[in-house]
Image (cartoon, rainbow, N blue to C red; front, side, top):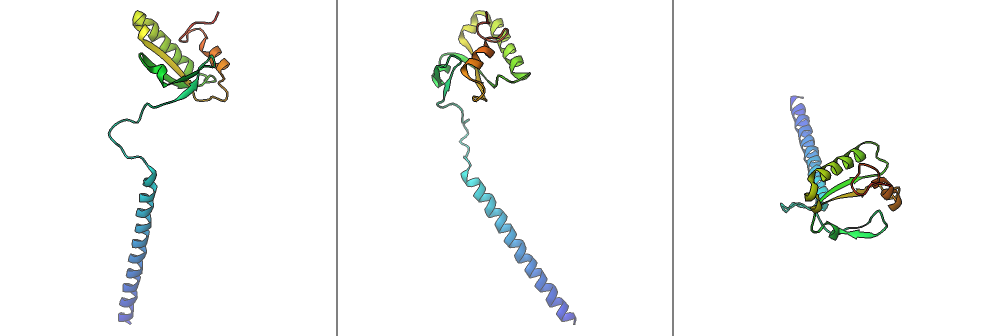
Length: 137
């Protein structure tokens, strides 16, 4: 009997080790497969590149609008209740404080909700008092 118990224990240990090895292989293989589509780092930020948008007047714009000036780019939406108006007003105040130096600065608002933020909605929103650009009449 004791020999049989030892053999059963040894067999159970072997089965447990085999299952553990199989689970480890599946987990490691799954992690390697998941990382296959990820970009590797080159040490350089992946910023810039071409883009094509429409401004508040319905005109097409692209990345060349950023050439030659410092650009403060802000992403938001016209139905934003707090942060967007506050941030745009602060940016306008910074632009005003810069005085003549603001000639080399542009504030760019990019909507993250293009379905609702039509060019006319953007024009109305951005022409509100306190925002960068010309105030509404």
